[in-house]
Image (cartoon, rainbow, N blue to C red):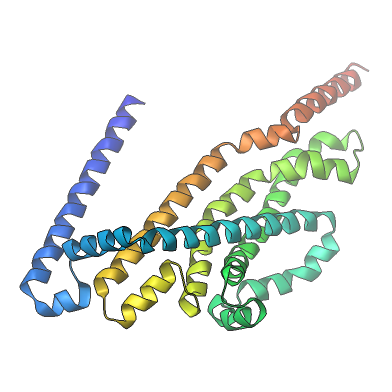
Length: 280
């Protein structure tokens, strides 16, 4: 463990060293060439633009708006998609009928949906939340349904000898057994949710980091474009860490559904039945 901890620190130090070299090279190249400065700005100028945006208060507002859009959209898409994906396990026929429609809808480009979303919901918060939810919904649906199938393979044999009802298997085995896939989808959905919200802001918005990038690019303020883009990267990284922290606590949710206790009890009962049969 100590060796692994030390190796991680060494890797982090090397990463920071390489990052500093790249930033220094960028800074020197921009100072030595007007073309590079115009096209790519320079780190010191980007930092100044970031500080100016923070001092003016626009950065805080834009970050808060984009964060709210991503959180609401990702949560809605993950919860609804996972719920439907798990529910499809209850009916194999329904799952087979829905499969081609799910594939088609999942491949529908979000950018093409944005104009229609503006007509339906306007340019306010609802439109960005809808696009973020749409971007995450089908990933959650597919991974949750796949996780239900894996849970069937791993756990349902415990209940075969007791003729458990399908609803009991669903609640006590399928749902908690698919938690791994559900939380894996949540981490994937963070990036997709950021993308959906950004597209909404890019198309039509009066606030948000996407709107800040569009406004700055229209004025050829490349330093502000990179500054707002950096904020999006930081936001996505923080939300990914949040999703990772929630994923690590998935066992608590599984226990809330009673899965470990139920499996232990029924496993013991099944072993007792098998011993009786062998003894008989």
